[in-house]
Image (cartoon, rainbow, N blue to C red; front, side, top):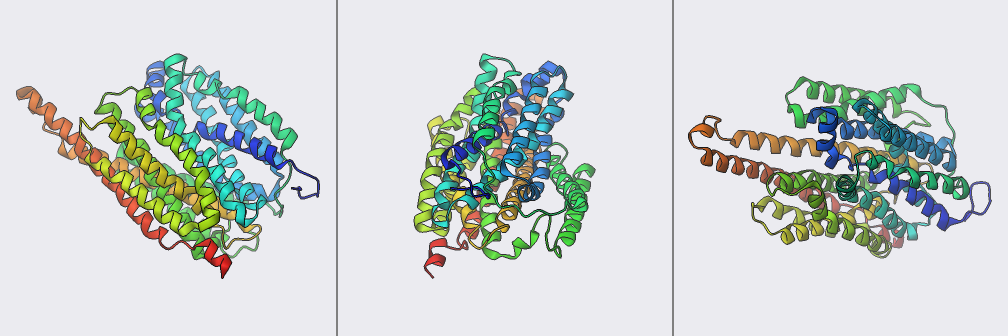
Length: 480
């Protein structure tokens, strides 16, 4: 393997370095959820305030992903990755040494800049640096990093909180990131072709306001409901500015983000399949721990351990799915994966207060097998008709679509859970006159909310299966 200047590159160490760095950044994406109660108590803040550690993180990450396409095409891989890891490291140090919640949040937002760059960067390297017949295998390996790390986050954070302090949630990552920075200086070379262009400031402003407002609007649904001004204004402003962004970018010869790729059916359909599968998975990962902790009374660590087997199986199947894609293409894998995803999600709508834990673990594992069969193989299939510089733009568009769809889906699930639960709650007066009846009806209201949310996640799986049936089969295209 050679870089763009014809100099030899150690491919194995290049990929080890990129995957190690991406694993470090990906591990923190949803790691802090189990730390919310600890931070609320330590800094005397409300639940809506502490949630900004995740909401703000996703907002900044969603804003950076579209910008990553321009960065990848204008700067060398080493420079991009060093910058991403440096932002991430500075953010870790700020949060680790913080004495107030404001500084923890500031550090968290800086970390998101690095994460928003590393995710699309490694996907682009995998697509560009390997031939089409090996692309599925490498994307499967990449799926272990991008998919497994976030799934391990809650379990890792639960263990840290049980054995150390909240600061160690950030401190534990500092030394590994420093080591990866050293490896980056040694092994990362400019293997991606550059096509430099002037930075489009108007495009950055429009995309930042558009995607930032849209994601903010969706993030407020769980707290304030769909009818609140913050939600309606956020979504409306987001849609308007995204529309202006698309109108500005469409006629450009060298666009900041090539939105015209969405006119390629094979790319758009495959991107929707990965986005919907990710939405269903994240939805379950949000709602299931709530059920385990609120209804079954499990601790954050134990609820994290409940989903750990599924996360580990996800990593194993991701490796296998890449090889399967190289042999049989994306359509059949996508259909099987979407079917298993739906099959693993539907039984959650039948959970009770006494459902065996083994049953829950098995169903979640089936779901994660389905997601693993969809995510990276179909991401590889989305690039079947893309060439050259289109790959970097395709990666950015794919990840942006996934981010927006996941935020929207999570907002829908959260609102369904809250609305159904609130609607079915007994009258407060019943608490004094018949406390046992009130307790029983409150439990049933909570279960009705969880059942409704799980049914919505199942609907995402059904829609995902329909789109998976339309994915272009790569091997058949090659043979033709």
